Amino acid sequence: MTPRPIPKYHSRPALLLLISVSLLALLWPAPFAIISPGPVTNLLGKSVKINEDFDLETSGKLFSLSVYVTNPESKPPGILVLAAWMSGKSLVLPNELVYESGQTTDAANREAKREMQSSEAKAAIAAANFLKKLDPGKALDWKQSDIEFAMKKVGGPSAGLAFSIALIARLQSPELIAGRSIAVTGTINESGDVGGIGGLDQKLISAAKAGARLAIFPQTNCRDLTIDVPGIQLLPVSNLSQAIHGLSSSEFAKSLSCES
Image 1 (cartoon, one colour):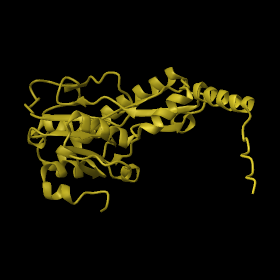
Image 2 (cartoon, rainbow, N blue to C red; image 1 turned 180 degrees about the vertical axis):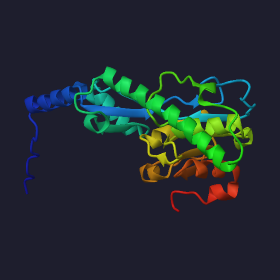
Image 3 (tube, rainbow, N blue to C red; image 1 turned 135 degrees about the vertical axis):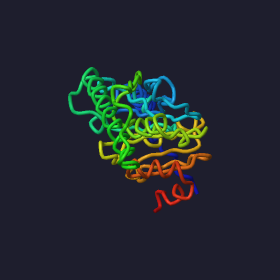
């Protein structure tokens, strides 16, 4: 019996064309945004300046988390998009899911700065409202002008919850941190409600790298959690009150989980 000849699926010219097209695709600019783990900022340091008359000595570290995001006008080559996707540490999304159509880098930076400033103001009000509820009969001896936020190269609203916790710890309750390393992310409004953020996995990777042992994030982001972060206790919250009580009571903290 004579065996059948092995078919030649690709002639040499066709194979070269396939290789050329593949290489071109890897080098061609792609309309994707890459979200990667970003820097952390210790809010018990100089990034939040408080009038020395009211700033209490607070030990430990309270990290605000962030991500790196490619700007709206950049189109990374396909090979970088593929590498980011394969790394397991970065999130790759179509540009239109991250930025408005036609948005420029300058416009995006201005919007991020505006959102940061709004977040700072809301965080201060949320902290003041929380402290007033704890002791309605006691007037606050500090005002918003006693606080200066000095975050650099970071924008957006997702540090709001971290700002509020930092203010409460440094102005009244330093025992909240008590020498621990805590990471926080989440937006906040004046009433203390905590809102969702983007890049949760990437932020938790940064938290682990910084040595955090507890990470507080919005309950609504539980559906976005896809990674396991050994050594970090996760504390999902819906409002500032839950975050503060979770820091104060280990039993209450155990009641807050993405499964509950």
